[in-house]
Length: 385
Image 1 (cartoon, rainbow, N blue to C red):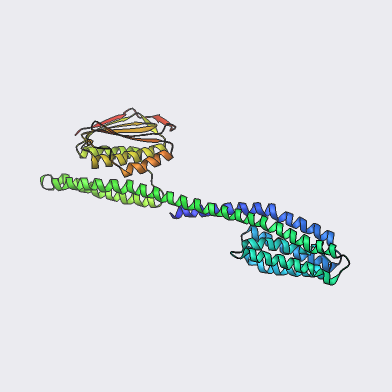
Image 2 (cartoon, rainbow, N blue to C red; image 1 turned 180 degrees about the vertical axis):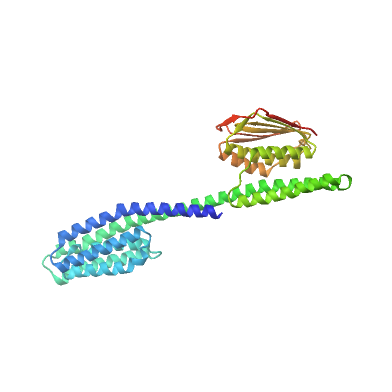
């Protein structure tokens, strides 16, 4: 599962990078532009202008770190700086726009808090209002005007901005949660696919090894050379299965349809089952791999569940049709391997058909949209019992 997890992690990093760049473009320039306009409007003395610039810079830094999901590292310093600028502007330099930095930073920090957001928001709102109201201690020339400019406007801006940024933060959190769920689903699907492929490899091999072992035991006294040949084939089959399992673990396994067809023919003949193969066209590589999986699973099922004497295999560029006799007169068995394979075939735009009638069992897979090339001149093979 490690390659898939790595790919998903890289994909999430790329997505987060794109989202961060989008937020930088959409959020930071307006913060800078608004801050510059307010500084130009409200500058009176050089130290007052310097204080306003410091507040704007702190707001820009906080916004930039917010887009990088790293606000916690600068939240406290930026809050302290912008709060000091607001106090300085309200009480010393007569700057009604000095609250701007604190309004931006506060509306970013409050939604990020893990708990007590409402209490923190109300506390910050009370601080902004208290500092603005304290302006009346310095000047009482225009009480109503000062209350509007230093109390009502700053608190109103903070009340409006905080819920908006909270909604933005929740949207980003939901996007991240969705990506995480998609990643978990992809890993689960990959595990199911891996389990199915492992079943295809080892379930088939173990059943064939069992069959060949029984045959070798019968021949060990009557035909020692043939028994040794069967044992050599068992050894080769186990070695090949080990190699396939390693390839599967490294996501390199690919089934070869021709090799699967030859393997199925040999297995049926070894079990005394006649085989007739009609190969009419060649499928494209992806379709051929899926047809090989269907053939392998069906071969295992025939050897395990049927008393077959004849198997007919028809291959086209769009599918495979396997019919065997010797099926038991009973309800259609629940074949878990074919059930998993049906899902895989369906996901690739195909259809898997399983039918049982009058002692005959049919397994067919069709891919209507698959491409095909003509088969070699020799398209039919036959094995005898």
